[in-house]
Image (cartoon, rainbow, N blue to C red; front, side, top):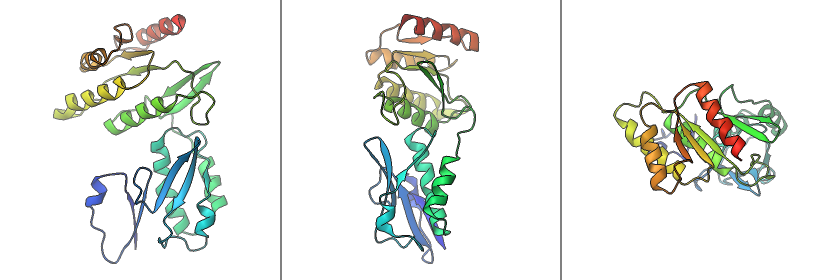
Length: 238
């Protein structure tokens, strides 16, 4: 058999592969991955370990020049999600053209990292649900949107973040929100609107300590109309 492992995950390295299974590792950050995506001049490319026996029908040298057209998908985490699907498709004998065509058809579900454009504004909607890894990935994606005109950087220079609490985290909730606050503190944001009932105060305290001005990190009552009002005031002041 064959097992496909995400080498960007520390937990995966603890997994013992059965001796009768072939291991194929994929990743972005880990240089030991057999199938790896690299960002070069705002474009994702695929690279392969030449020692890997993954391909049945395709020349490795040719596939190393494979430019990944990820369409409307946003974020490095979505590129990582594509890698095992591509590797498995290769293993099953799909052609490069077939895989490219399939990737172009992928669309994010409603509320999951969708870029909605109107005039000179772009709203990135990631409101469907939240978990620690997903929120951190969304923040990283927003942080990477810096250079207007670059392929993966489509938003204007002014960035506004609206953030709610992550629910059902149990005893780890405070620590996780602390980590999220520290990540936001490193970002270049015009304003952060915090609507969480439990941890908005904690996140705001972290931001103020990091140098955010009080008017840059505000706590708002939950509710669409309230948040909409805060957002409209911010946009009018720009």
